[in-house]
Image 1 (cartoon, rainbow, N blue to C red):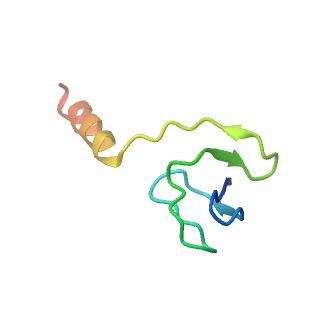
Image 2 (image 1 turned 30 degrees about the vertical axis):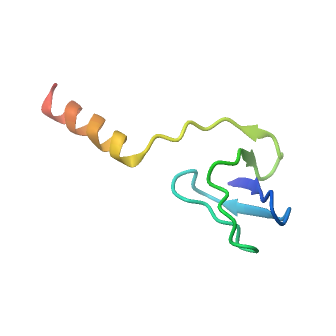
Length: 66
């Protein structure tokens, strides 16, 4: 599970996914570009988010054997 801290209202926000947009449930501020933290240990998690379109293109190339 992941945690982000809102830089507007300073409340924590939790999610089980690192993909997609992330908005603060309290104030609605966009948290997508803020760093991830492990929800249990509060240690920073370095996650490389690859856009889904790029993942699909790589999969299609692999599938076609290119």
